[in-house]
Image (cartoon, rainbow over all chains, first blue to last red; front, side):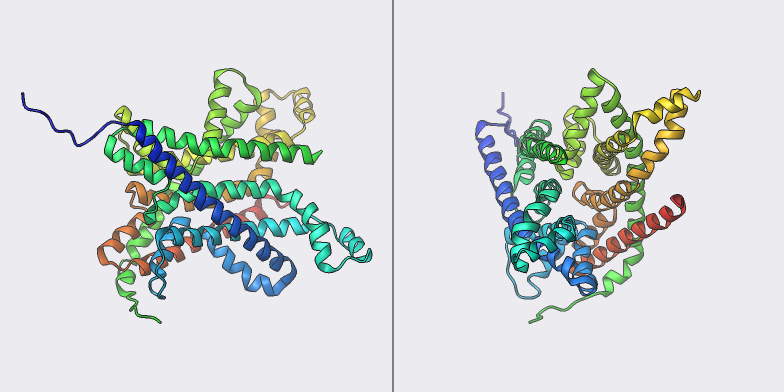
Length: 220
Length: 220
């Protein structure tokens, strides 16, 4: 009997390691863009709050574009635009840039809501106690407003973590791309997708539950 | 600095095709939203009033939809079901994926809406002689609709943006069509720039229409 040649090989334990490495890359790109994006977003939120009509005419429409165009289009567009202006970015760098701006545009409105959540009398009281404008922001607005919008921020951060799966279109091998590669080789889509999905779920579910319980506790 | 010649002519030539594809995007998003609202309503009611296997099913649906990437859900309907010999057309994959996702997100919004209506209102309407169906359709649902109107609008925008993922499962909606033309002409940046503008316009139209509708619906 002739030996049969198969182009597909089954799911092996070492593939779990491959998926694990990809999961670490998903975490890494998410953590990086969420942390930079949050800092930028808070600054934008402050500009939106203090800038009044000037910000409403300049910063707000620009941030709005990033919320109104699909992330996948933004990624492809930026990845193909960067070489035009002479930047040579690898998929990871392009992904971080776009995810960061995307996070910032979402966090900006959250941060603005946080600043608005602190009543004017409270801030006047802080100023009349002799605090400077920045001390007022740091010691009054940040703790009170930050607490008010923390659950919303967690929602944004988890959303970006999930959306980081889209960086795979640029060829960055994160969790979902890795599972696609494995599916092509092993032809076991159900098993591998379940593992990938379980990972996202295990990351996202406890955090969203924790944020919801915090929200309930603080509401009382 | 610019060592690149922009070629907009091929894009302009295929603009009618892109606009036609945009209609397909809208169609699939609207269908998914209608199905999502109906299913989401059922899921919310089940989670509020029922116990047993149905509750488990509804909770699993909602948590899976909210805690895994939309792209993962699309892949699952696309490739995952292939394990069971179920091969769906790209249109069905996108429609089912979007519906699954929208229903999960909307269910949570509806649940919040239902919880905001005091129980006493239902008891009052029941004691006025309405049956359960009448009390729900005449008293509760209209009020809940008002509460969830804004989240539904947001979800509609998300549905349009999410449908762009159809590109990755071979669906020729706006993004898929763009991808098709872009890879045929190598004018990737130009095509995706125009597509981004089309998405932006669609999103603004939806938001504008919903605002107009709201002023008519909620006049008093």
